[in-house]
Image (cartoon, rainbow, N blue to C red; front, side, top):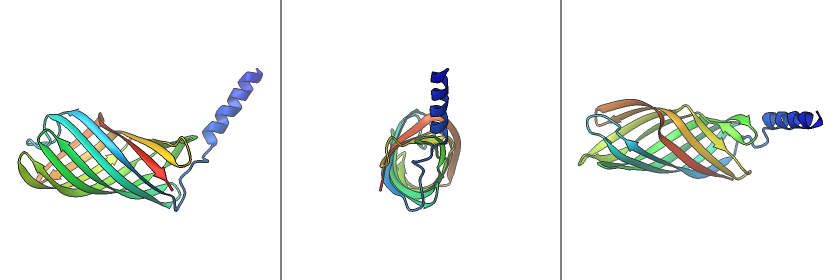
Length: 175
């Protein structure tokens, strides 16, 4: 009985603790990696093959739990490559101690080469299942598992809903 009470007290403390919460003025640098093997896009853009993206980023908390930031990403697939600048906004909701639900909206633009010709790019992405785990005060590890994406590549648009199709992993260093 005593072990059960101790376990319940420990679990309750873990669930209500928000000591690692992000507060106004916090900043971080970091980045994200994405990798996928499948077919994406429309009319031959970013078509069947492998896809890889790397995106260094910076973020600043404009209010408690609300972050704005930006990333510069380089994306490459079997028939394309692109560079995009992507401002974003995210909300950090504590789930349990050191684990956060972080839905994020990304809006970006850039340039790329698709199937041998240059193209302008507009992207709109909503990360519905994003999470961050902070094992310490200065480090965080993130993932995004479910996304809604809209891409406009030189007047050819595509919309997709991805679940574990191109999950991202990332890290953040807070200062």
